[in-house]
Image 1 (cartoon, rainbow, N blue to C red):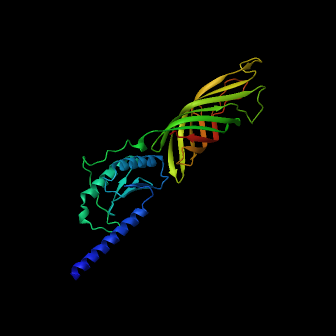
Image 2: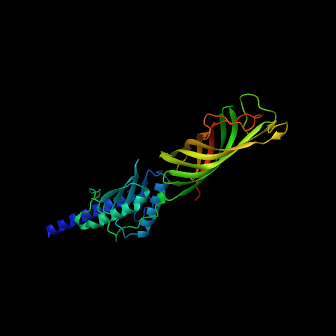
Image 3: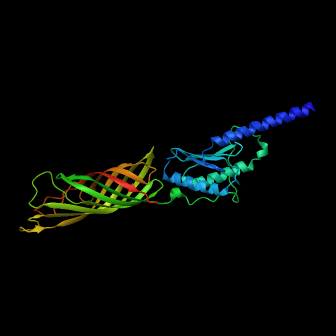
Length: 324
């Protein structure tokens, strides 16, 4: 009888200790985690990872209490992410997701891994057990991958204002521009329009009544590299620029003329976009471009007016907005 009572006491103490561990583990889980918490580390890993994690959390939440899951931790590194899956009894397994679109298949494989190991074979314990070797998911058990939010296009609209200097001739001008682009993963593809309403030469005397303006439209392709809470942005652009000059004596005689020239231009740009997780971001930029058809050669469109410069540099401050 004493042996039985002693065994019962030991069983009750073990059960109480296990219950206490479970309570502690539940308290350590993020607030509002529900049946299974999906955590992104760091929480500002970028829009593609944030969108993919949000989609994964919705699918896990829809599964309710059917999955043996306490937490899914997505640790984003320099290349890809490590997905750490923790079951309700503390067992862990992990997989690597090379891109946000791989999160669905990775979690499906982890579900198969932990479900294929019998929970009865692992005694309850408060701490995590050694990682369960990953196995390939069965077609019937795999979670259908999401629509790959990271690979989908994000529309971004932007506007900027700044100053431009061009040469030869030392032309200075205000510069305004707008851009619409699609961001796919870390690449941005877009169209742009720029306007220089008034270009004034700083070298030599300008003719009476001289004025020069230009308008450009083109395309751009760039790369966004996240660093902390900032995106470093760099890329190239190609555009067609129409430049117009007016002034007394232009076109011959003393009448005010308006000759113009259209030519291709190519350039590079670099800058920052921050805060990276916000939908409305500041975007300071530097750019340089040149007349692709006449590098090193000014263009004279009217002998009575200054020649057109062939290179220019721009500094601007803008905003970009990612619609909901």
